[in-house]
Amino acid sequence: MKLRLILIGRDKNEPLIQIADDYARRINRYASFEVVEIKETPLKPQSNVAQVRSDEAKKLRKILKPAEHIIALDERGKSVSSVQLAEHLDQWSSHGPSSVAFVIGGPSGLDRDFLAQAHARWQLSQMTLPHRLARVILTEQLYRAFTILRNEPYHK
Image (cartoon, rainbow, N blue to C red; front, side, top):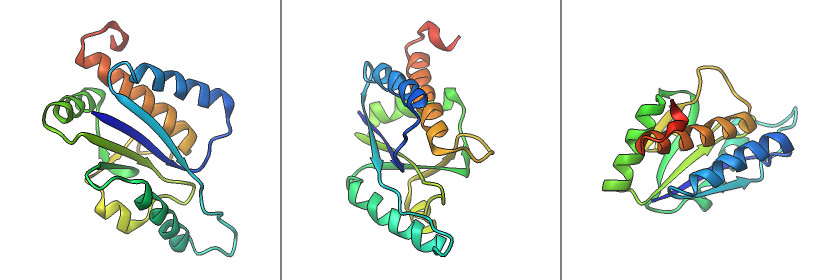
């Protein structure tokens, strides 16, 4: 199984990148994991937010693979526990899809049409998180889910 984390925006916060990269290395012990950063469309005071989201959605669609299972991360999405995430990973590794993309939007969020086309919409929190923090939380939770599946001591 291949997992990808696709983010709108490039993170420049070195300590948070180091934390997320540490979890990414750990995840790669269990599955192929890749982080893809897409340049965000600049949001200016005169910008049309819907147009910015639409432009970013076009960039996302170019990167996503045709058979990829898309999980859009959004504060209005479904809440998923660590154990439920582990169950999803187990199911995906056993019965497909072979590739899953977790998508985190930029400062203006994800496009409505993109959200509607995603296979699922999950939340990491009911609170709005900056994408750099969402990156750390998601990579940690993916690692935690793999340790749960293998009954390893990390999650206890």
